[in-house]
Image 1 (cartoon, rainbow, N blue to C red):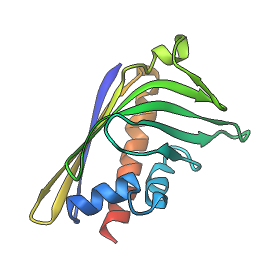
Image 2: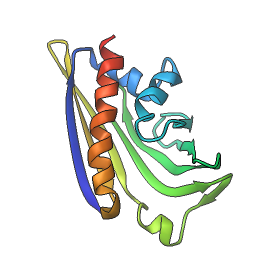
Image 3: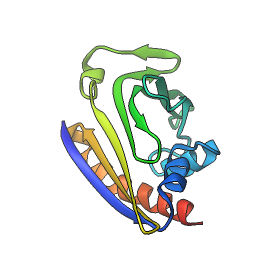
Length: 152
């Protein structure tokens, strides 16, 4: 896996950016910025440290799928770490095998640093090499959408 890093500055408090990004006050804000990855993107679960969380969407045939993950750490308004350890195939959790090995143990970390009303969001994500181009393109779009939502 390769580690990718993305940063953006958002003219809003860290609390507002964090709440918007994670959909704390309204899950729709999470769904709006992650729609850049999949128009049906959502999550099931919560952001509490140690919690299992599913990142789900449906494919072009309407089949449900996504990632099985754990919130490795969550310091509100400062840092969130997600550890991916499986995939969802319909209602089935798959936590071993070649498809999972590409992602197992991968981390996605979000850091929020506020200074004078501007929050710098830094994303660090472990990505399988075959998806590098996709994530390099899509993360930038997703962060632009997050910026737009947070600054409104």
